[in-house]
Length: 320
Ligand code: F6P
Image (cartoon, rainbow, N blue to C red; front, side):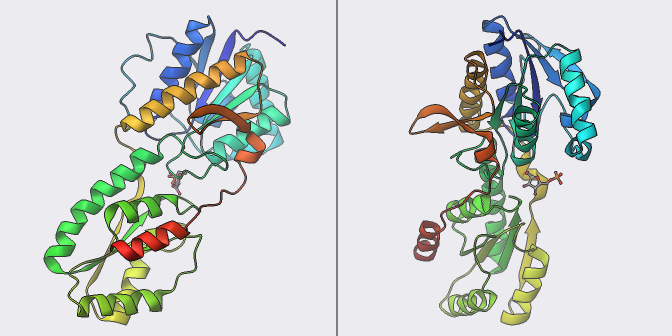
């Protein structure tokens, strides 16, 4: 096993990623390992766009959203030509191993580096979507839920004052996690998610019944991967005859100061990723299960994640 002297660190963006960068760099530094930050994600990796990171250079970033390394969607990395450019840049810069912090797309790239090109790689799950298979919590998801919740609490003020229906669209790509959390925590009447069939007739019948029984607000959270809020709001007005407004929360959910939960997760995941590389692990993703840090295969982590919806269905129905 080759001793690791230099780690390349590549990231996506969401709240808590800077805290994870700090954890990686400072843990590596404690083991006398250098860290080269990869600028602009996989595009930067293909171009050899690296920035040395030291314990001092990551000071003051713990509470910042986004990523200090910048990132991008790198379609060229999906081609063999792009991948070979990245491998050449890794070798030319004497990078012995990589840590990739991000969601499904970033971890799929990490899996390619490890399985096809035999680069030692550890993935750190970080995405607001919380859609990494086998991982209970990704960095950034808790902050995103809290940001969306803050917006919903504010929207409720207007919903209650005007006795309006609101349809609020949250992110999450093909996963309903964000919508489920926000609906339950925000006291919303319905969630519309990719994991479930949308029964608009039933929702509208419930709204009509609810308003007749004296309900003053009706809030529906829709996951972007299932339906679009403006179209849904229009249909609800058409069917119920009640005033409906839509709000698309969009990228506001991906930014902001990381919550304490995300900072702590980032500290644990980032540090453990470095220690795992030192112990010789590769092709794995960091995870916490039963309060214990561990590793799961990257190939498993990038498969579709199943979300259990039953409990949310029951609770949202009883509690609203
Ligand atoms: O994966 C994170 C995420 O914010 C998804 O929730 C969303 O669908 C997507 O990224 C948006 O991507 P972009 O910022 O490239 O528009």
